Image (cartoon, rainbow, N blue to C red):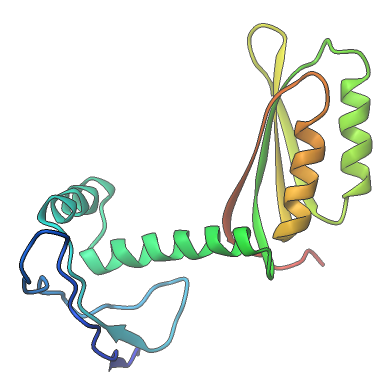
Length: 175
């Protein structure tokens, strides 16, 4: 069972141009399947419009509570931050759209992927309209190396777009 601890109180901050307001009531957090352990309770002050948008997201995405939604948003932000600072291993995808008719492009992309084989868990491609392929690589490793791989692939002549998306902390290694 998760133990609930009280987080140190934060100083209330009023939105610019507004007086102070009471933070909204928050049900106790129930823990996350991603992280087990102690759960901290804290207050959050939000502008009313932002709170209404949060409540709409909670309802439409099927979260059980605001706490669950805020935890998911915090997790996504922390994964993105880990990707920005380049510390530790992360997992994600690299999505490429390219013109398969471009001379030697597929061989060049394959050669680059072979050099980075320790970072690439899996790949697949699908045929799109107008002579384009969509290739998706499932990757994991240090964020800075994943960015280098993405930049090298995306800079090849004939690649129309290349995007790295971090999705979570690193997945367990294959054995």
